[in-house]
Image (cartoon, rainbow over all chains, first blue to last red; front, top):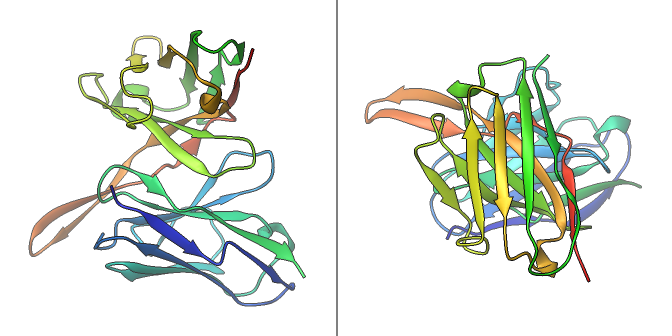
Amino acid sequence: DIQMTQSPSSLSASLGDRVTITCRASQNINNYLNWYQQKPGKAPDLLIYAASRLQSGVPSRFSGSGSGTDFTLTISSLQREDFATYYCQQSYSALTFGGGTKVEIK
Amino acid sequence: EVQLVESGGGLVQPGGSLRLSCAASGFTFSSYWMHWVRQAPGKGLVWVSRIDSDGSRTSYADFVKGRFTISRDNAKNTLFLQMNSLRAEDTAMYYCVRVPYYSDRSAYGYSFYYYMDVWGRGTTVTVSS
């Protein structure tokens, strides 16, 4: 099974900060990588699919990059509504999630 | 409006059974693969099971294989998860999820990128004596 490791597991940031979250796959997954945002008590929302393609309706401050085993989710200027937990997910073989990264207010 | 609404969760004793349902609306249900994903309290997301668009192919996570059965009724736009021999570790919020794909052509042929674009609000399953 492909293991997905996210780092950091949590971070504190201020409004307007540039935030980067990393996801590493245990083997080459090309660009079969998705990112989701989950707020407390809510279902996850899709942000990015195929590593870098922005889901319709998602603000352009979110971007994804990477290929192979290393991927990043970047929020260019953190907004109040972005404080949430973020998950990566590989779709190369089955669908497995990373452990999540909680973004908190500094 | 595209919507998924789960139901059927509740409190059940270890060894018991539950049947979850997911009612779909606002899209052509029979055109999509559907999945179940769960999330234990305070924990991360875990894939549970999937079914293809006509119900002919299914797949399960190892920890539910032989205990859970996924199925669908395309005439009623409904997805199901039959859960037997429940354990305390099955306690979680269960989400019904729509999974489309994006296709991309390259020199090597077509690649299909699956992603979870529509989620229900979830239904809570608690396994406890």
